Amino acid sequence: MFEELHANRTVQLGLGLVMGIAFGFFLQTGGVTDYNIIIAQLLLTDFTVVKVMLSAVLVGMIGVYLMKGRGMVRLHTKTGSVGSTVVGGLIFGAGFAILGYCPGTVAGAVGQGALDALFGGVVGILLGTGIYAAIYPALQKRVLGLGTFSSDTIPAMLHVNPWAVLLPLAVLILALFWVLESLGL
Image 1 (cartoon, helix red, strand yellow):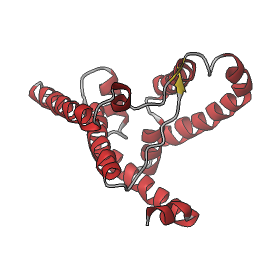
Image 2 (tube, rainbow, N blue to C red; image 1 turned 90 degrees about the horizontal axis):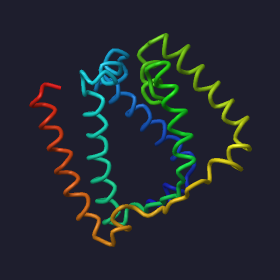
Image 3 (cartoon, rainbow, N blue to C red; image 1 turned 120 degrees about the horizontal axis):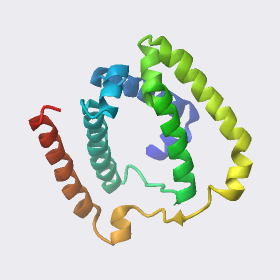
């Protein structure tokens, strides 16, 4: 069944659209498309963004491994490199520092009518993409491949059942939620 869905491009595009709309809805509902909430997170005075992201990590990691255990999905991990991680982090961080939005929150903010996100964020994303495309050949030769690392997941690297990593991590995330709520953050 899932192979048929995966092979059907129209269904894939439709699912992508529906999931994108749902993602934007949940970002907006969670408050993380609000510039003031994002800035408060950067100032460490409001941890709404951290709570939303940790909620996504918690639900996602458990959901993916439950589906994997039932044969519904396969993991397709990719090798990475320190060079590409640093370049990506610098690009992401520069855009975030200049505008106060990440790409996902820019889309959600545009959807709710934030003109700063539309003109600063969308234009910034397009300009940044163009600049990156122009310098990509040089980066690929000199930087992006530096310090490659394995595509293994943490459970695979440790040679343990995935739940031996997921369950303690879930408990840690829930404990962090409790601490943040106890501190009123």
